[in-house]
Image (cartoon, rainbow, N blue to C red):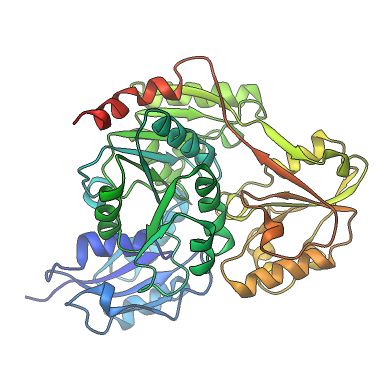
Length: 443
């Protein structure tokens, strides 16, 4: 009997996980290829044989998603499996239509079918969109776990942009570990704040092997989700962050709406900077769409180092890259800080962008007077550094989660912007987590 031939549409993360969990060891299917989108420098590589398993001794090729129709014909594809996150429902269906028009089935794997079970309690931190504020929520949860006398193991959604075989299972406990692994800006933005708290972070490609490692070293696992993807692990509690700056997106993006409908707890963040009518809209949508979920409200207060460098100045604002690109935001904490402290002008970096940053601005035309800190490898870091050097301004607003000055050279005066989390009223995160923390404490 002919094995159906599968093409997995991905972005170097969820696609590999879906393959590992659903297809790798099942001879009923034949995965002919992956495609790559969202992340640069993935297409043209192969998923290596040591990760692909015994059924794929030569590994699996990775092609550009732009070649979808050609691949369906040339590789005789029977079924296309969509496997990446933070895409509008409309965009998902455009890909479905392209596959169906060429005669292939189109499939979405369920969240449950791709979740691994742990023998430790799991709290999953998820979101409706990239840039909603998962990171401060995750850190607050890790703090509460530590205050309860437990060891949290932070498992981060994959960002395997280098040698996939070497990155199969990664463990980061110190900054030296990050340097040894040659982590990108995106990785360091997520890992360094946890390391500063004393947390150990795990990531990689093979999330079953990662799970078994973290189970040995932790009392409770905190899944630190990326984009608006669903959790790779079956969670005792799913905490989903909603962003009132993008009210309505919780019902119009995939798989963010899956998280919205599955949530046990909503954290409605940024209530200190969002339009109050939008905050009310998100609260109402959450209450009507998922009435069983608790609602926790939170401010994300902004702190600025050397705010005097902003007042009356022409500044270049550098924001978290994925929030602006995948997340579709036109601004972040840096723009809010520049406005609050009286910057006279936000300088437009687009005329001075070099290399792939020029392509980023063309691909994301909503970006205006802000520079996304994209840095998926050494070449992009050099291009980012050169773009900053060329942009005429009085100073730089560094609003990336990691201090960008430690990664690229910046000669202009800098004002560093960070933000935290402050819960408002009740219920609190502490109350929402009480049952799971109690479960972890029981022998």
